[in-house]
Length: 169
Ligand code: HEC
Image (tube, rainbow, N blue to C red):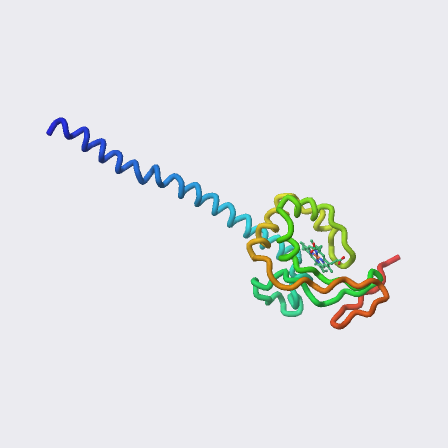
């Protein structure tokens, strides 16, 4: 009996230790998943307060933001017509699916487009914010159609379009 006690004790110890050893991995995976979820949530917040939906999600402003989230950033057939021609807010779900996160950060910081895209604001986002935005958009998934091609000045767009006044001198 005396000799079996240490073995029983060891066995008991091993059993007690087992869940702790196996528990370490799910714990680490859990906190990684938590961080990832937080980053995605931040991307969603930034795109909301950054106003990207207002143009890049069809009907967003007129519906008071009531476009289902699954349809966010799919681009818009509403033309913006001005001295630059006619531009269309692009399908960012498709655009970002063609870039790596690194490429997106570089691209967003150097981006310059025609109006009314506020590229000069996007250029100022911090890397970490651009990364969060990217993660959010990528998990929405690449779907939908590309927005219509921009038209050069002087070419008559099909409705619907908004006529923009000339920029101030
Ligand atoms: C006032 C309307 C408007 C708002 C607000 C807006 N965009 Fe745009 N965006 C456009 C238009 C129009 C174009 C196309 C410009 C062109 O064709 O030259 C565009 C183009 C882009 C492009 C380049 C084309 C592409 O798909 O790679 C990116 C990237 C982009 N927008 C990201 C954003 C992000 C991110 C936000 C929010 C922070 C945002 N936009 C807010 C109208 C807007």
